[in-house]
Length: 350
Image 1 (cartoon, rainbow, N blue to C red):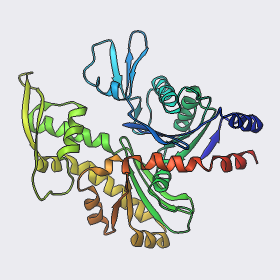
Image 2: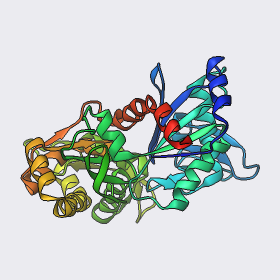
Image 3: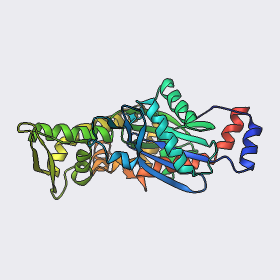
Image 4: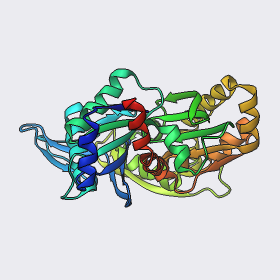
């Protein structure tokens, strides 16, 4: 965790005395942005999608409204995700999106809040600086960064301050962050760019290869959520999907089964399992023994793909648990970490 953008400490105290400051925790996800306001809890959960007029560069819609435009916009309107693989890919649009979400989360009386933002565990200094600058330009007075696996562990209710090993696998939209945590920090960690988006891409490629039909991101996500699995299901379920026939160019409907989704999703799922395996190989023996006793915690929306916990448990031989309120885990952990901001600031000033 780092503290940037420092100002005079007395000025901060004065701001809080008159109620002008507010602490906000943001899970800046590739697929979803979740905001936590101190004292209120989670106040915002919106898709991280922005619709921009390509001629004037004006932002036309943000969040859920913009997501409905994905793949359905005229030539001059572009609906995009400004974050890819857990990091900023379009700085200007990210800044505008953050400004919108900060003002929406804080309300009308918001004045230069302190903000804590989650980042993947293996981002570069340049990528960190991009997040800090975007949040600062969007109106933050101070910006703090917290690694996603640590925030996820706090949000899952794990006491990370004790000298024992806890393994967290946080599967988001753009990245899967895996970390072994002890005494409040990451002992061994990795971040791979295989998560929810890669699973969607695998579905798009499979449907194209097997049925010669092109489908969009949203349709692929619906398939993954409704009938997707990475472990054989007891009962095979099916779903009708519409797309564009690549031979005739006309709309076409096909029926897809969960057994086919298993074929489509198993490759990226095994990449996540292999990454967990490689982290376990690098874990010190004492902490590995703790993990064997305590199990592996899974968080993030990506871990809700049917059978992913069973697959990981079978391949590692360690009990796997899916955290409660898994989608909001990181944001909740960020919210709890907000309570320690004053301690952090004291250390930074020293």
